[in-house]
Image 1 (cartoon, rainbow, N blue to C red):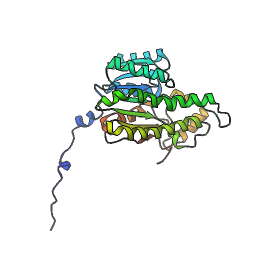
Image 2 (cartoon, one colour):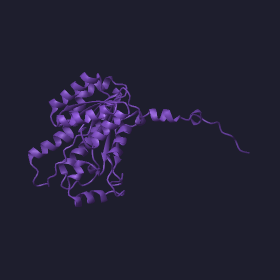
Image 3 (cartoon, rainbow, N blue to C red):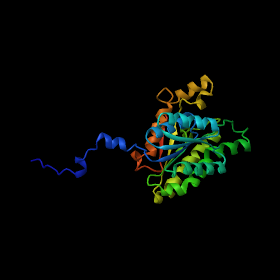
Length: 270
C-alpha cells in the first residue's frame, strides 16, 4: 500500500517568467559605480541602467565620466558622470553629495575602481603602498561610510565590492594589489555583519582574467598566461562580470550577504 503524502503549499506555487525577471529589476534605484567609465565598471553601469537604475559614474577623468553617462542616456538610461579619485576621501564625499543632489537617494554602491600597481617585494616604496591601498581598500571603506546614512534609508540597500580572484592566489609581483583585495574581502564580511541589522547587504565579486584595458596593457605572453590560468581557456567578457554584479545588487540575491561570488573561469577553486 502506498501512502500519498500531502504536498506542501510551497511545492504547488510556480513563479511566472515575469516574476523571475522582476527579481533583477532595478527601476527607481540609484547606484554609484566607481571606476565606471571603462572596463568592468562601465559594463556594470550600462547593465544597471538597462535594468532601470539611475547611475552615478565616477572615475578620475571628468571627460571619460561624462562620455560614459552620455552613452547611457543616449540609449534611454539615466546617468551622470562625476570625477572623483577613489583614493581621495574628500572627493568620495563630494561624489555622494552630488549623487543625492541629482537623484535624491542611494541604494547601491559598487566599489569597482582599482589600482593594479605591480612591484616585486624588495622594491615596494611607501608611496606605492599608500597609492595601492588608498584606492583598493581605503576608498571603498570611506565611500560606504559617506553613503551609509542614505543606504540606511533605502529598503533595498546593497554594497558590491569588486575584489579579484588574485586574492586567492600567491599574487606574485602583485602583492600590494592582491593583499588589498583580500583585505577588502574581509572588510566586506565585516560590513555584512555590522550592516545586517540596518537591512543593508554587502557582498564581493571576484573576477578572473577579463578582457579589459588593464589586462590588455600586459604583454601578449602575459595575457596568454593569465588566460591559461583558468579552466575555461578564455578571458571573461565585461558583460559576464556585469551580469554577476547585477545578481548581487538585485533582489535575486536577497538571501546573500557577506559572501564572495567568484567568476574566474575556474582559475581558483573553493
